[in-house]
Length: 60
Ligand SMILES: [Zn+2]
Image (cartoon, rainbow, N blue to C red; front, side, top):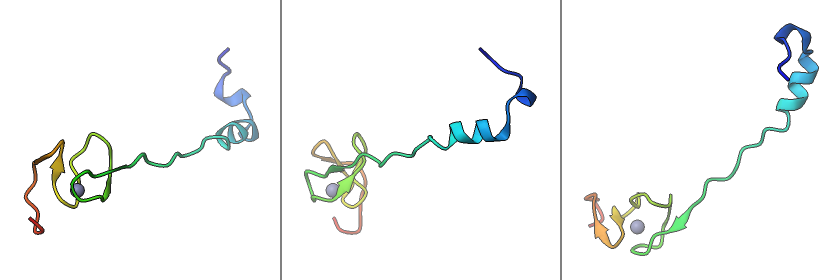
């Protein structure tokens, strides 16, 4: 049940928030150059996605 903000101590709020945790970003390997990149996104180093080039890079 919802509790009015002033009725809940700072300690109680902070204890709850102390359990919030960040998570590591998921990364996959590029099939073209082998670099790691975010899944379902164009590779940042070679510009390829799903076997096709979408971004022109200095390397290409
Ligand atoms: Zn790549």
